Image (cartoon, rainbow, N blue to C red; front, top):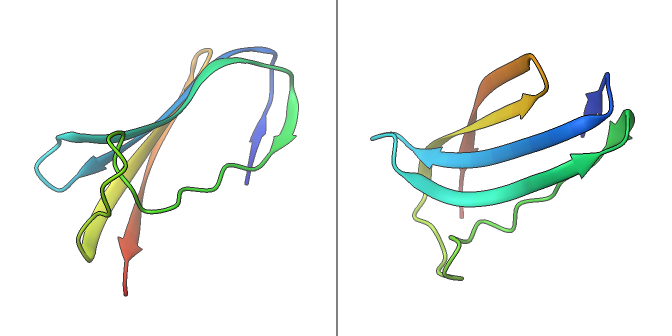
Length: 73
């Protein structure tokens, strides 16, 4: 879950440890407020990702944040 402080275009993308794009979760205008995005652990092509460390990056207007996440089976 995340809170979008201002209305505008939001992108959330998942990357592997080498920095390769794994999945585009969000790429659209969104209203200000609290939102929830669930990643099912698959790539843009629908393939299941391997167990391991991944990063996601959210950009919303002038705000950007990167966080770690771990996929476990």
